[in-house]
Image 1: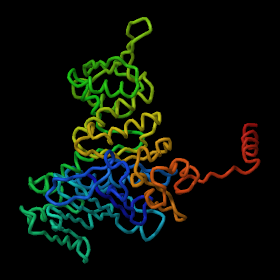
Image 2 (image 1 turned 180 degrees about the vertical axis):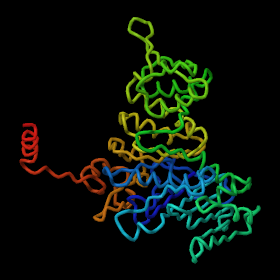
Image 3 (image 1 turned 30 degrees about the vertical axis):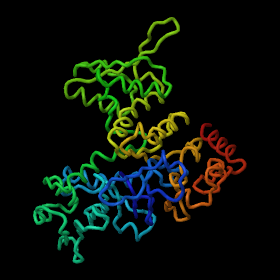
Image 4 (image 1 turned 90 degrees about the vertical axis):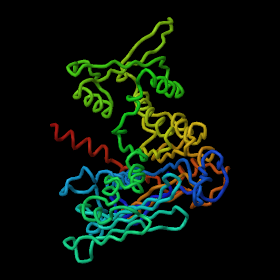
Length: 441
């Protein structure tokens, strides 16, 4: 369960920016949009079930999610990363000072009803600092702090362990490479205290960035005889008029049967299956006006239908397991009503009994409403005059609870974080057309 995430000096983010899921003031929508953990060993803050990030193009919305993905990669990619492989770090480039400094990430989260605080500072070559604190009884316990020596990389690291962390600490310190996290190293050496934390980073965070979407297609794995009814119900609930789904296995030599024009992530998964032994053909069925059925390839369905199919597995899996879902551009190819429908699943305690959370970016203002979100669930992202990203919540503004039209206020520029569009200079189009005509001649 995500509590808070902060990042500094990463891509367009220069100064520290902080995104919080902690419930703020106000009791609005508390019964649906807030998670209360009441049976933990120590009191835990109430957290939100979802957060939406708005802002103009190139303001840094995606970079905030990329920062969370980079932190995940720094942890779970440690085992596969060879000693000379660079880390996924890109500092703020529009300043000589920041280009030479490491990026910094810190996250507060809950695993098994215990709060943890984990952070990393890193450059492209190595991890500069790493720290982990636990709060099993409400008071901070230092589990470890690791820092590059002041004498430089050749002098190695100074590692301080707390008494509450048990295990082969000298071994962890000795075998952890400069471009690997100590958390991952100790967890992969079967430390029982750190393994659940590593697992949360590996499987509890589901992140989809850019147009590529998910790198794991749960929907396809669910399409066996027992589970495909769940995917079908998910699609039908979103008003897609398919009556059935069918999955046919393909022999590895049957490459000609591969459907054309599939989304990239579907294509990659199917090709991987074919390379191993078998692949799949996905067919949808529709009822006709004459009472018969018509079958078509998933690739022939609308972009919205294909996206909902790709979302079906991750959405159901996240709600079932209580994970954190992070998705960039949730609105792409989807009607506003479908976007709201997807968000409301996370706000429904019957569909979301384990406290799953949703973090997403969007330009869809039709859902920007106090009927769907609390004021502390809406975040904005914008660039300042130095092109650096800043992130701030709607709750920073004086907004009339429950009555103010937030969509109208945002589009009018009241909260900032919207593009400033300037008219083209008179004659610019005619001048360009004249120039092109001259070249053609």
